[in-house]
Amino acid sequence: MRNHTIFPALICACLFAASMPARADLAQTVAKAKPAIVGVGTILPTRDPARMFSGTGFVVGDGLTVVTNVHVLPPVLDEEKKERLVVYSGSAQHPEIHDVKVVALDPEHDIALLRMSGAPLPALTLGDSNRVREGATVAFTGFPLGMILGLYPATHRGIVAAITPYVSPVYNSKQLDVKAIRRLNHPFNVFQLDAIAYPGNSGSPMYDPETGMVYGVVNSVFIRESKENLLKQPSGITYVIPGNYIRELLARPRAQ
Image (cartoon, rainbow, N blue to C red; front, side, top):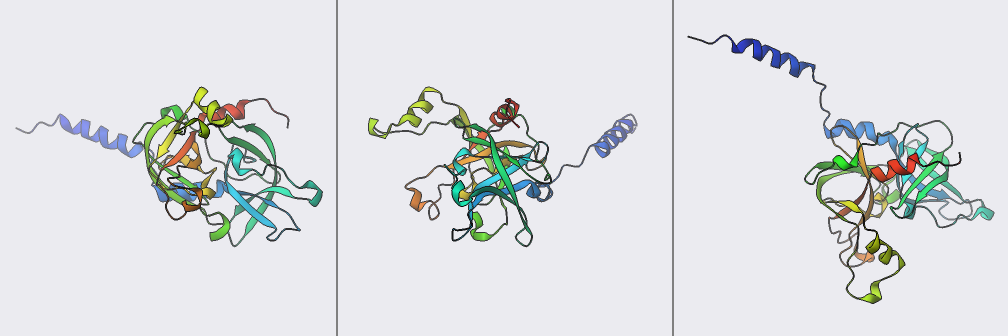
């Protein structure tokens, strides 16, 4: 005799599944994320080329705040020659240039906040990076080779291979400098990815491929031999600063 009591449960399960929001695939997520990805650089009219690119950034909050790395920013601007800090948005066919100013810095975690002028751009949402676990699938979007390939952000996908202290090993005391000693005294955890990033990827957002929620900012690539060999022999290991440090910097009082 057939048991008919299972059918109401099956119907309920089907109705519940139908009511669940569809989970986006990576292609859909990338399409939504790309308008929030910007190139960071400078413009100096007397320089050849006048436009220089130094890294990637991404828009958060009200659409006028850009997150990037401190090391992406120029040490100084030649204001006498009217050098300007800018971000590039849009497409290679229709690029837009936005003047920006630095509004907050966290040198310890290599995070910078910039404030754009003009109309706001689409923004990405920051998630709780404490929820990220080893083995999680993630993606990051940025400009791996700078403007060599034009204003075409590229996306890479990998997994969180490890959550590890951000301390570079040294083999003798001669390799110790002030920055290395500071990190040894105050280590903090970063995400280590099994994905290849290049210098232009600094400042790229690391996000969930299904939701687009940002959990970190790409900071550096582990260089196996030397900086000169990076493009020829990338190690495939990328470090990401957890996004909660971005949230802390956003929450700090600052002058508008």
